[in-house]
Image 1 (cartoon, rainbow, N blue to C red):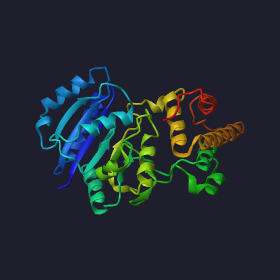
Image 2 (image 1 turned 30 degrees about the vertical axis):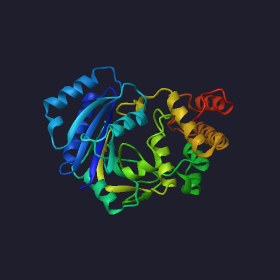
Image 3 (image 1 turned 120 degrees about the vertical axis):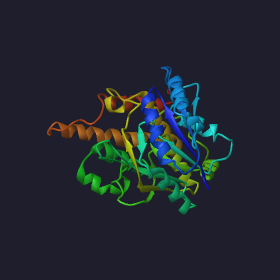
Image 4 (image 1 turned 45 degrees about the vertical axis):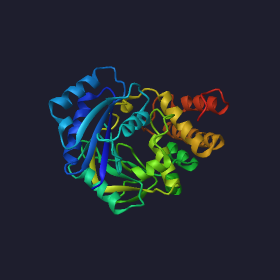
Length: 323
């Protein structure tokens, strides 16, 4: 029987993380493995609360032994999940698969088994990701194309005729109506083959938050481990539950750092600069349209200015160097 390591990362959301773990344990029934909850140095009592509740509920003695571990630092999404992956299964055995579940994601009873069955049936597939939907049932986009210069222009221009012309490069592609291959998958409910991780390594911890799963999926695909969206795996996802993304008043520095690092690492500094120019040009044309149309801006205040300043500093070498 295949062994599965499940990792849930917590940062200052203990109650929600425990709800996620509870849903995961139901979905893990009959699957061999263990579940590790990583507290990313919340500093708010999360670690103590989760450790106490896990012991009180007997989860640490169940068939899916649950452990709560402390990473000791808030190194971000990739670093925290890497810590959990390295913690491994309770008995020290090597897992066949690793399943990452966000603290604000709640798998339906058949969701995890659907991912596992898909990877078992497709031995050359490296990763498999779920169909996510909100608490209102509204589907979330979780299957994407890799970012590119045309894709950046299209995403920030938001103009139907141009989107149709550049449809091959649209990052947030329409939600597939059936299981099948995609470029990359959101990390909110993502199962990864251990053989693939052994071949490509874990998350690049230079990314604090955002673009880390894009980078990991691209490395996997380039190494010959493609990935599939699995429509039958259904997971309820709040989205931004611990990052506060929905309430951003300014684009965070870590998002800008991650965007620049991704493009520079994958394509070089020149390509990163051109992707930024494309985004700025598309965004400027979108704002020009808003002079004549009553539409929501759709970006945090100062978004284009912040991106131009941040990436300009990076390009001329005054920012932190990419690794």
